[in-house]
Amino acid sequence: MEKLLKTLGPVCAIIGAQWGDEGKGKAIDMLAEHYDVIARAAGGANAGHTIVVKGKKHVFHLLPSGALHPNTTVIVGSGMVLHLPTVLEEIRTLEEAGIDVLPRLFISEEAHILFEFHKDIDAAMEELRAARSGKGIGTTRRGIGPAYMDKAARRGIRMGSLKDDLTKELEARVEQVKHAYGVTVDVALEQKHLAEARKVLAGRVTNTVALLHRLLKEGKTILIEGAQATLLDIDHGTYPYVTSSSTTVAGALQGLGLPPRRLTSCIGVAKAYCTRVGEGEFLTEVTGETGDRLRERGGEYGATTGRPRRCGWLHLPDLRFSADINGYTQWNITKLDVLDEEETIPVGVGVNADGSVKFENLPGWKASTQGVTSFGKLPKNAQGYLTFIEKQTGVPVALTGTGQGREAMIVRE
Ligand code: IMP
Image (cartoon, rainbow, N blue to C red; front, side, top):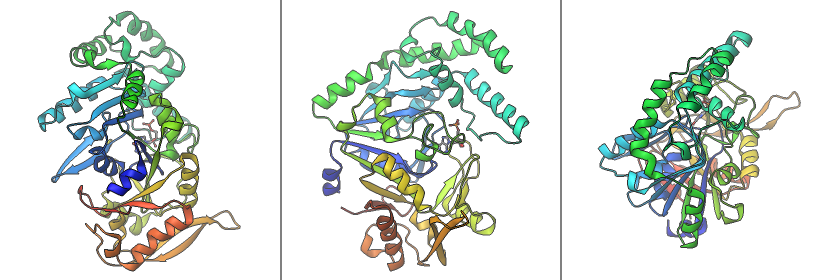
């Protein structure tokens, strides 16, 4: 681990390589205790980072999951959209677990507030799309798109205004929102949420960009916690079936106000297979018995919405694309053990002349890799599977997940 930490250097980002739910939380959790600052940069409560500690599941939607470590400084960055009741609930849940996050939490004054009416607009827009074309985007209905719409339209309300009386701003939205989406803004409810949040959070809202640069000058180390994933990026993802934020490492740096040259490493996180929630292309998707088996073995149900995830095989062109965009220095391949029972494991390696996916069938290992913590103890075919990914992508696999718990991880230095 010491050697790996040295390789990663003082500013490391962890970025999802596929369509989210890669299991970023575990690498973050493992590394967080070695970093001074844990920062989330973009997105909102559409994310769901699940971490299992001593058999207890913790799900984070807004706060960085690295917040579980008591000595970290926790930053909620400028690129985020914040549903305030969710922030309060996560703080409370952590407090109940004996983790006091508030005194070390710093929320960007530039982050946008995501209101209840954003969620209602999200739902209304999904229903409209479904009525028009038979299907929506399959959003998480957490109001992400509408909150970023307001941000881009330059009428969003930012955390820096939390201390102010926002009655006028909210009332100004009532008619426009009704007219455009048929959605009623419940001003009293929004006010209630604002008042509750003001009491707890007002003192935690600050200029996080200045803070981060001050911490860097003091020699502090930073772990950047990516949310969602590269193929869901608003620019580079499978548009329009994407989220509304920049999910790449460049987006994370932008969301935090950090210059690219500060970054010392970027870990790409990919499942040993692949999943997706919501609509959109998924070239290596498998349905039927095999898809169901992957879903059950991998527990592939959304951490945020509980939706069953679509399952399929690894698609190396996606991983190469993702590695190009983010400049991964290492892979974290997660949930290798989910493939333990497969006879053969098809992997998408390119395209056939007819445009269909070209698969290469790798031999399975038909043995348990659950809880294995050293590469040498993996069955030969499992080793071969990881080596194949390395060769095909040109990025070394530094971390491999072999089970749910904190300990079930192979670290290769
Ligand atoms: P939205 O971000 O709620 O607008 O949803 C847009 C698309 O991104 C949908 O297909 C969602 O299922 C997907 N999505 C958003 N956040 C996550 C995530 O954290 N994991 C997996 N999929 C996500």
